[in-house]
Length: 112
Image 1 (tube, rainbow, N blue to C red):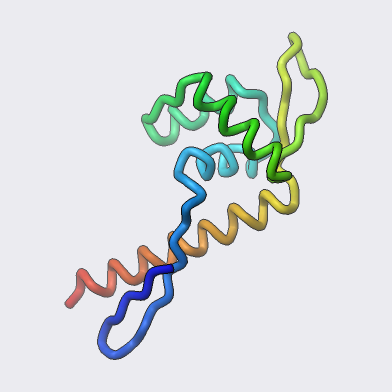
Image 2 (cartoon, rainbow, N blue to C red; image 1 turned 90 degrees about the vertical axis):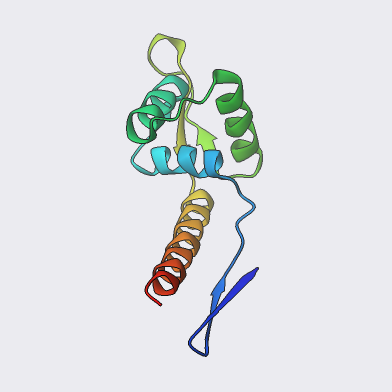
């Protein structure tokens, strides 16, 4: 948890230990089901950040274990597509809200 005080107002910014790469995968899947390679390509295209396959599949395993994504069965050419679950969508939206609160607090501090 992080509290930022600005002009006698306390802003609560929950610390997110969830991790940026996890959020990138959830963000990619929030736009629709994708297989691993498509997730990698989309993340790199939008962020310039290249995740290695080992990193990606480690993230996918954890997200699946935690019930945040779900495999859809074999797709084209044997590729395994994944979709975000309702719990994953909520987790992603909560993290996004937390990031927006933090951004708001930083912008307010910068304007002092």
